[in-house]
Length: 112
Image (cartoon, rainbow, N blue to C red; front, side, top):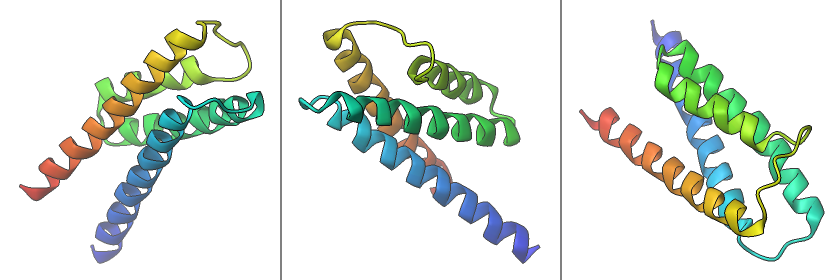
């Protein structure tokens, strides 16, 4: 029983770490960075959102799984979606704020 509790805490901590890293990357995308940085963000976002989608599936959270899966597809670097710099900046801000909101909601849920 204690193994499950500790591994469950580690899973939550890794999800929190992934979300914080993605938040930082999303807001760094608003700066004028070299093109290679945006490629790096695409790869990290694909992996991070893929892991979050998998974790959501394991916890039977279908809505979150679909959202994270959709974000993984949106940011994937193989078949690029050309939205233009301004639209991508808006997407980055919305995704960053959404991730902050999910962290706050999970924090509030764990307090009860």
